[in-house]
Image (cartoon, rainbow, N blue to C red; front, side):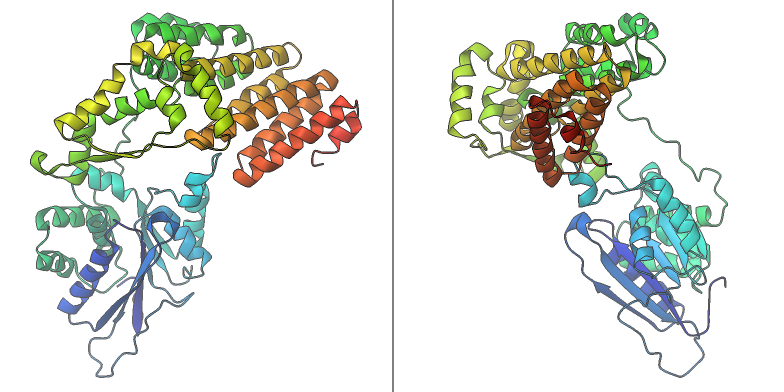
Length: 505
């Protein structure tokens, strides 16, 4: 068998919650036992969800004829691992970094889909580890690589990722265990036997290269059709801008209405002469104009397809589904959907009373009940009134100041206009996070426009640096605030060299 040495064969399975790593290791132990191999399995618990993985470790004695008792280990040894069986792609990188994967010895069987880590999720900017780097590392670090999107395959075939990977392990030939023993191990557990065996067969065929449908067709997500009424407007836009707008228009229509989408196009039209600037404005303006308010949240929670998706993912019958939504709006979010003239005095008072955070109203709403569903659904009835709401007044007022800044910058220099337009990327989140980032955005915009009066190239560099700092996270936000204030002070004193010295060389 490929990959089999005399002595002990080792298998490491790094898995996070819900991936079935424990079941996968039990299948391997059971299959090896059925074939007469002496085998041992253990696990080392990790921390919650995607901050770390629980590692399951299996060793089996390759020689079934010897009478000597094998000396099994409880832990994997760096550089001495025979099989890495990873249910998610980043785990390959983590295990390679830890030294377990060896190009002289290790067969890597893995799924190439990603479940993003906590550090990837909490970053203000894009912190997703590049897939290309993971692929290059996997191919370099492993003796043999068997990799495909097991999650996509499992969803397409109505099975589970761990069953598909078990089949891929059997097909890789890395262990001296026959496919029939793995099938019997699945059957012996008596849980979802048909679905798991089907998944095993798919993984077995893919690893052996016998399945012509090994690469399932990706499903386009969030790509709603562009209405014919807007086709002409999109076609008239420059290359690179129309593609963004074609995605933005359906989003804006779903968020509000046709008039709202037209308003988006009108705001974008002055920048059409500069495709570079227009593409950046088109992207950030579409996201900003569809800001998350209580109406939008209610719309998402009560969509017709939501329960169907939950039911499909959980594979539960209709009577078994019970969904409880945990909502915790703060004061700004509560009166944000009310008319601006009515609540503006209260909003100003709340800003003075609670400058660093608003009181919240925690709620647990069972949206699978009639009363719970209607309680949330009624919020969506306020959508026609959204344009006159307090939140709309605040958001669109800030958008107008940003667009005016981009327009003024475009009259001076295209590169500066791109950087000013890109500052909108820092506006994210909701509640206290959004209020904090809006404050930083206001400082960065004001500092960059003020710098443009002194030196265009310095202003572009300042805007770029401020945006980069904010996207680093909370510590970077504080540094961006300090930089904006210091640059403003030096520019006010007409000390341009001193302001330039604030930026890294």
